[in-house]
Image 1 (tube, helix red, strand yellow):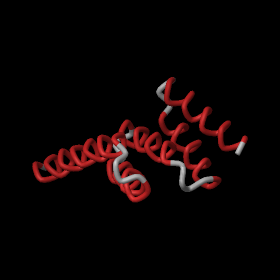
Image 2 (spheres, rainbow, N blue to C red):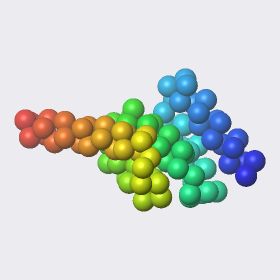
Image 3 (spheres, rainbow, N blue to C red):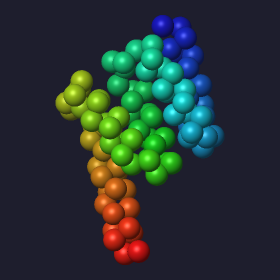
Image 4 (cartoon, rainbow, N blue to C red):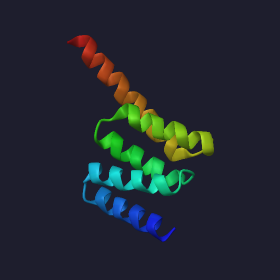
Length: 95
């Protein structure tokens, strides 16, 4: 559990400095230790949104909502992911 907390804090520090790829990697490492901790999924979803990886963000939020069906952050970030996916589809259609 101590390693999990350390990795999560490192991920949070990377988010604060805008290093989203590194933060997502730390959160992924956390998930190997505990797949039921929803905050690392919503945190990684935030990173994916910042990196324009909308499908990955949606998948993380879907996972959280299977565990906690009223998680506000997961609903909000999934909505942002859907919005990003729609914008991407419109841009592809316009090309």
